[in-house]
Length: 530
Image (cartoon, rainbow, N blue to C red):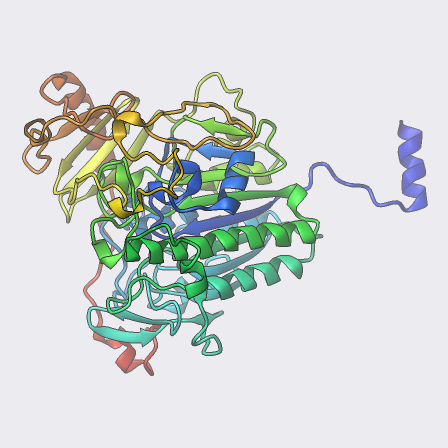
């Protein structure tokens, strides 16, 4: 064998290095709800996402933060928002703060490992100074926007009555795509990065889509008519328009995957797909997402706000075609992907924070052979300004404070007609929960079984702003039954865990809005002003 190896080298034949770091493509959707994808049984068809999910590993017990900025900070830092000052709400356009510069980000770590790093889409982690922009936080290039939302076509963002243009390339305002649909040109940018990539280096591409977040208040749901027309069976017009936004996102996922295939990169690429938080339901932001049958809304700690859509696809998965019920949190991506980039081992040093909240679980995701799942606990958040918080330990979830909308909102009843799939029966008693298991080739929807909903009198026993509420998520994933009075010892233990987290919390970084940051003082543009 040794002589054969020397012979190959003498001939100058290229040798494939089995240890070559994988390419990583991280696709982050914005405000995508639990019931907005086909592989969760939605009436909205998402064939490209479904294909990659079913061929990969579906994360069925995956948690995100309840709103945009905290999740994005957690992805890139591997730390809970209570440890980066991002635990309260989101960064408003003219607020002078962001993800602390002391935090070493995922792209900075990957650059140290020889990766080429690129970002496309939404930043929302601070832009008051150039030091806080993506191209100064580890990304070689950034094409996208800084704010939390905006118009999909004209790229103006409205915030508190102030309107400014918000599309940029490497820190410079980019006017060329005014009038073009953002999902489509972000996709083209991602495709171009892949197709022109020098494959002698591994690629990290962070594609943070605008979809499916609402646009500005006057025109919140925007998609080209061709996408909307794919869903004539959805009679509710807002839900049909929203389905068009989702469908454009799904097409993007398919296009990115095809670019990887055409470039010969797909065989050594890890694709991560995640939402940043639960969907805005019941009129939130005038949008039409759906978290059914989970309880609650975006920007709440109910399951509908924090149990997220997520999957991993890669030929490098040693045991694909699985649904994973082990607990995972969005802070886990940084150590998990660093493990994958380093051959399965998370190596210390090189600025890796020893106090990361994330847990590396590439082996568990890839092989499914771990005897014990590495995460048994998730801090949902502690918001000292909003005065609410929550934690999950094992099967039990404790929440307290002013949580916000805790209703259960099925898709509009108009979609339930003869053209709907028989698998999309929206009555909770008929739903079937599939725990960790291999998927059938055609892909069975991964649907949550809630059991019978109790009477309103029983539901009203949970008033978290008056007393903490306790739920057994394994038996009651839709948070119907408050068990606090039945298990006071468990309430006490989870409160103790929250107190421990609270003792490590840094103050929220929120700052008063600075009028100097308003577009009217910056040429009509949202951009750095300090």
